[in-house]
Image (cartoon, rainbow, N blue to C red):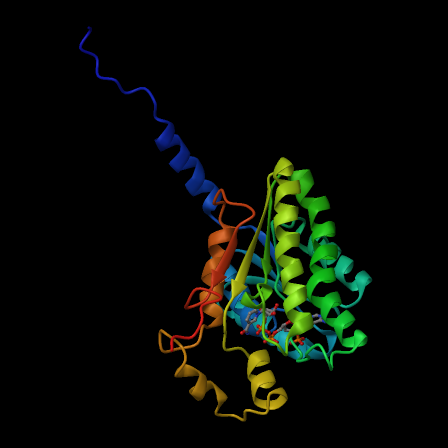
Length: 280
Ligand SMILES: NC(=O)c1ccc[n+]([C@@H]2O[C@H](COP(=O)([O-])OP(=O)(O)OC[C@H]3O[C@@H](n4cnc5c(N)ncnc54)[C@H](OP(=O)(O)O)[C@@H]3O)[C@@H](O)[C@H]2O)c1
């Protein structure tokens, strides 16, 4: 015995130094689809606050809202740019990634957030509606991921975050196509996570529960015919006394965006376990 104290493996220390560097998001570039409002806007703002250069995206007919979002981010010292395009169109999906690369030179984080949730059950959902929902909610994330992977693969680094829904498991009766599209997105996320670890690209999914957003407000008050007071009624059923907000989901997106070593995860972001039955 020499009396020397064992001090060799400083692996933990090294790992923490390395990880804190990788977890910083400053200078990263994120494309967040459907970020002119709702959950996407919440994610875009949160990313920008953490130094991420954000590509804000929405439909061409809502360019005014998009410009307002970008101006809001810039007024707080963030970096943002607006791209427009209908995700129901293949070429528009591919163009979003090209425009991101043209402007910022790289793409580190893709958030497939945009989604539509028009009502329809098995008896009244037309094939046309089914196809539209699938085009925006499932086919677009596929095309965007396909384009993003080309750029991420070159850097051997990347992060894809898909925004699903707790409807993915069973779903509401009047959301038959929507639920199926989100179920598909969940399987797609896991399949992609498995294929892309070889390129060090992580893929994770957040399944939000009930979030108060502009889109949800419209659907509940107009399509469901519940009027303007619907949200107050809903509060009575919320275990923690409020509905989820886009900022809640944004925190989960930040978790996945930082270089946490997790891929293929599904985070059900809801106030109770999904699938619980009402107590008698
Ligand atoms: N709110 C909830 O309770 C809830 C729960 C679970 C999951 N989610 C999911 O979370 C995501 C966001 O929902 P949200 O409530 O924030 O919705 P929202 O308020 O309606 O916002 C949707 C966003 O997606 C964009 N978008 C819709 N269709 C598009 C298309 N064809 N091409 C391009 N952009 C399109 C919209 O752009 P424009 O403004 O230009 O139309 C908007 O920016 C969706 O995937 C949704 O399924 C929401």
